[in-house]
Image 1 (cartoon, rainbow, N blue to C red):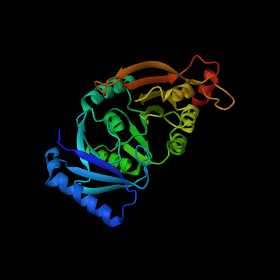
Image 2 (cartoon, rainbow, N blue to C red):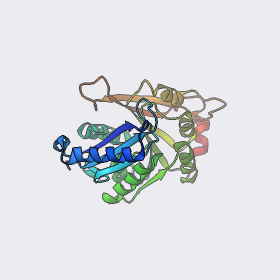
Image 3 (cartoon, one colour):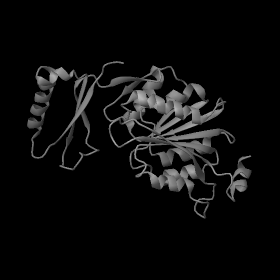
Image 4 (cartoon, helix red, strand yellow):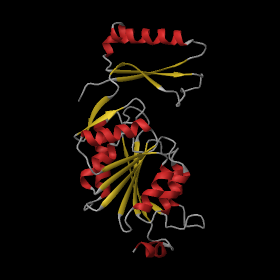
Length: 284
């Protein structure tokens, strides 16, 4: 382990002037450098100053780096990862490795010609841990700094078969599917925020004839339940391709001593559906 510690402090600007904000920044820095907070041994400190008093802060408020290194580093599955203040990364690394081992098992064997599409890839952890077993990894993420981290992590670990793209998943994956060789096998991986993915992303996945296996990592299955329904809804006039079906679901405890757990779900195309033959006629 690298012994790195990053903290992000939020406060509401309210009626503070710029001079008052700068003075507060200096007080916070001194607290962690020479004051009582020095025992925390922070290696990186950011502020997120919210112009409003919104509950939970303002996700759009910029991160201001005020002390230490700009990034922290963590080790996972034998790889080293650079992490920014606004990038997602699982903090319980030992349990995450167990989850990744299960995910790799579900992907299967003989993946030399398989492409992994990592939706909501964050710092690239999932895709990079799979990269040595597959032909190619394509990661999609809307947070720009996370994509920068993912690209840096690929270089840091000498991974040359991984590509990371910044943008809305529903826009990018359509082009990914169009540009993929016709009979390329694609395995989809999703690790979205608590609320799940936008319906347009699920529609794009459903319409792809090149993806017959999808692994969904959910930290809040109740909130993401609509996503599961959208993947498994019967063929309709709106979505003509064959639905997925839930094959396996296994909880992994990443949050000990809480009621929460991460849920790993395996979906496969439902080849028993009435339109399955039509669906695969084009593919083959």
